[in-house]
Image (tube, rainbow, N blue to C red; front, side, top):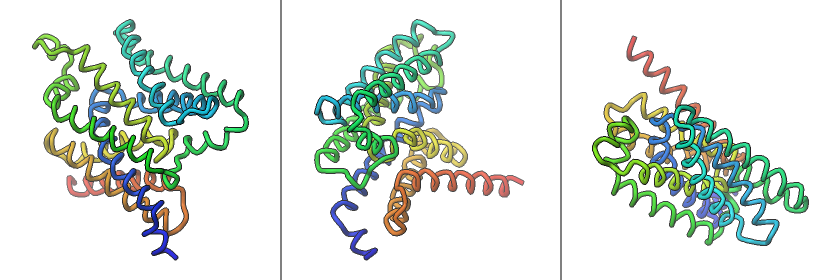
Length: 269
């Protein structure tokens, strides 16, 4: 029976979607962590849920509605960050509040759809269909291409935004581009790990890689590898013991982080 599950079509789609998100989440996450914008993941996830709820309400493809909401929220965050330069975290708090409020409103209006929307809160990777995989795959290609083209620019922006501006880089455009990419990744990841856990996939692999990597490039590679290990092993464990896939992946990442911290302490002492 276990073999039947692991080799079933739905598990194959789940694994494919998980592997794709396992690439894009840490690729974006490392720039967010270095810029101290880790909480932007939770913010855009809440806004995406509002879009998903509206999608169910008006009979529109939920992931597409959530993606549109996330991208619009990313533009709003950048606008607010510019308005409150000394209090940039205010933009995240304001947009998160708006996202939660809209989601609550749409929940109230569409009581019959609450069960469907709840699957996006906690993840429903086993229900991925071919359309979902196409969307996730498209976002993965976009993220990889953009990061490859602007890797040096994003690197400089993450460590010293003022220096990047002085050197003539289009800081405003790069900030917007990174925020939009974050919105795309989060809006496609919520069906895989859930809105409540998506931030973990953005940050925990990066947190582990920063403990063991000796350069920025190696930290990027380690983050992606760690993410993929957690996704694949987590999905297999969840499939065998009938556990929640998103929660299993995140708890596995936390266990890996603890083991890395303990191991580093032992080797350094």
